[in-house]
Length: 112
Image (cartoon, rainbow, N blue to C red; front, side):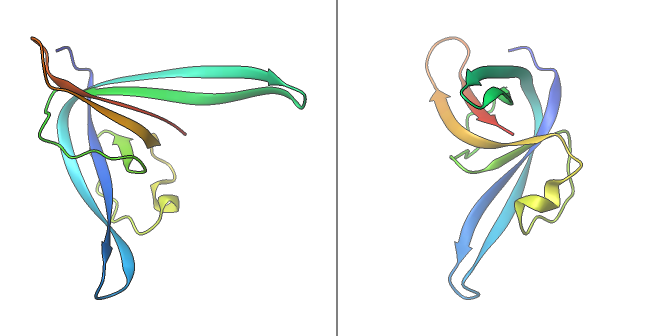
């Protein structure tokens, strides 16, 4: 699989001792990162949004809906999504594990 960058995945889990959400980060050294602008016309006018598609060749990485994916290596100690300001990132809306065939990978989609 062709790759064009690296990425950092932020995965949320609940800590029952502190009763707070905590974020773990996982560095992924090779991904295919693609960004496209989508737009639609509504009664309020034209709406645009960035849509991201990332393919991860390492299928052992755990990716779930509502995780955050940051382009490049990121060392931010995330407590809320606002901590990622200034980075190119998006919220994961879907993660599909394509385990079969000659090119197994995880297809991650989402938007900013």
